[in-house]
Length: 193
Image (cartoon, rainbow, N blue to C red; front, top):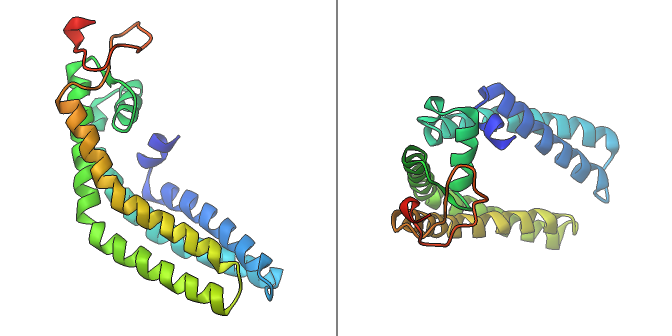
């Protein structure tokens, strides 16, 4: 599903992101101590549309950069490459293995390129939400926790991708031969299986 969404048109991505964000904001506005459900629905809808437009265009551009070359893969190969870029055994097919490496490199480059902006955004957002939680209502602690989680993810993602890339380059990742269960020994290359 995530790969299908990532390769979809910008407006589909925006619709999905906006629907999730708008629903979350409707619930958040509605459950606040002083919130009315009419305001919650209107505020959630407006928030969802604006967020969806912004994220649809932004994520579509990022996904196009990340998934460059995926149009040359079958749907099954694309899923294999996407999965192997973050976990599990690397594919035995050298073409797919190189596609995995290229995807991890692009993801790492993107994470490093946007790191400063993301750290500043999530740190300031976390601080703002802590202030709002202390001065307004405890519901803002949820937003603060979410932004702190995104901040931590922003900080660890490049190192995690670097580790994955090093493992792929050093053949430390298990290799899956077609028709096997994928339980090869770490460090084995395709000729040893």
